[in-house]
Amino acid sequence: MTDAAALPQPAQGNAATAQPETMAWDSKARRMVTLYLPLACFVIILLFPFYWMTVTAFKPNAELFDYKTYNPFWIGSPTLDHIKHLLFNTAYPHWLVTTMTVAICATFLSLFSSTLAAYAIQRLRFKGSQYVGLAIYLAYLVPPSILFIPLATMVYRLGLFDSPLALILTYPTFLVPFCTWLLIGYFKSIPYELEECALIDGATRLQILRQITLPLAVPGLISAGIFSFTLSWNEFIYALAFIQSSENKTVPVAILTELVSGDVYQWGALMAGSLLGSLPVAIFYSFFVDYYVSSLTGAVKE
Amino acid sequence: MSATTALAWNRPNQQPNWLVRLFDWKPFLAFACLLPAAGLLLVFLTYPLGLGIWLAFTDTTIGRSGYWVGLENFQYLLEDPLWWNAVFYSVFYTGIATIGKFALGLWLALLLNNHLPFKSLLRAIILLPWIVPTVLSAIAFWWIYDPQFSIISFLLVEKLGLLNNNIDFLGSAWPARFSLIAANIWRGIPFVAISLLAGLQTISPSLYEAALLDGSTAWQRFRFITFPMLLPILAIVMTFSIIFTFTDFQLVYAITRGGPVNSTHLLATLAFQRGIPGGQLGEGAAIAVSMIPFLVFATLFSYFGLARRKWQQGEGND
Image (cartoon, rainbow over all chains, first blue to last red):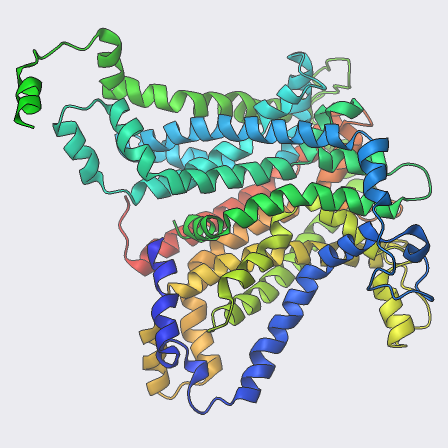
């Protein structure tokens, strides 16, 4: 996990040894064409839908449907009408709150259970712990698309249908395997000697977990938390299948089922809704982007 | 200082109560630690998986528990052209999207592996399509694919003059299929690129130096060093990508809902349509269960990819 972050640093010092492409015979123009041009294309294509989303959200309707008189790539006279419509004429704030509550509760529930599970598998090392680890890894490979029908019948029988609690309880099915997997990798990187010292000093296992392992694992916990939060914010199929009443819907489901109505699509409001729904995750993510990238790469390598 | 240490030493060795001792007993502690995760997964993952398989053999509908009907659901599906269509499109969608994602993602990873200014900012930007809720970016694509006001059509027709008419992206079967695949590739590139970049950075530069001294070409260095060294990670990332593309739901549901005339149904969207709004839970479950053979195949692929990784890096089982 650490060498992925450490390697690029020496590479910057003497790029020639690390990157054969940049040896002396490699001209600047060639580098321009083979490196910067394709990279610019990638960035433009990857960002364009967001740019288009933003532009559409702030355009008045007249500009939205007239590419002849107005330049479609720019906003002539920015307006907040779409956002105002969204905030005051629809239940959008309510959907945001529901989504936030569900995401936070599901994140805490899965962080709690996966920290304990990862600790048990990686540190307590009981007989068969590797099989439990493998089983959890396999659980991650079970996609929600094959679970939602039986889960819907279960949720209905438990009396949780149309309640956010149903989502809070079912989201951990894909969050727990992922977080456990990530945290096992993280716990592996904490020196075992620290725990041995504490054991010799007479600490109990729970004290070790609380006072030694967990404080050291904070970066791992943060990245597992971000992953869980974004994954539960983005979840769609369970929320679509288990929630019926408008006020309990999550943002992605509500935009698609409540805002898309009738024959004329309100593109401005739709795009404003998508933009506002994406912002919380994007902001949250931008604060922790380094944790995110390093744990993503770490989790893949583990 | 000495006073406090003396105090600590003089304190009688108090016997911890039974609860503390129970939690320090390793088998019990392991059990207690695994309980929340195992409980959640058994109740909400393993049991529904079994229940789903059982439902597939019944004629359950919403509001009525069904009776065992044996293979009737599957026999019905085998004669259902819509199911065959969904199988075809699921395989096609997964195949083309995976090839696209990995070709472009590998290219992007190779580009990012160069010495670049603003490297971390660039990585943050590139991950954005993966962070943003799929449904919301799918809605943006829906708008980009609008038959009348598509910005792509505008560029091609008005600005570049390459076409005479607007492209009808979602109005007929094949353009709709390819439009969805393009949106899926767009969403999948960042994950593939960043994961493969992590793999690229673990490759020792000395291998390239040695190859350079031996007079290798750039293609040879890619073919005989980069690619084999990347293969283990490639196998894992590809397994995940294949599983989640094959069982994709959000993108198709958000953009076309399986239309036009059911031509873009994936197995997951068909299962949803039959099961939840249609109320035929048994049949929906049967469609969902019919995805399992493909998933098992992909998991085996992952398993052998992992085994190869251990062999290549000389790691023991730990």
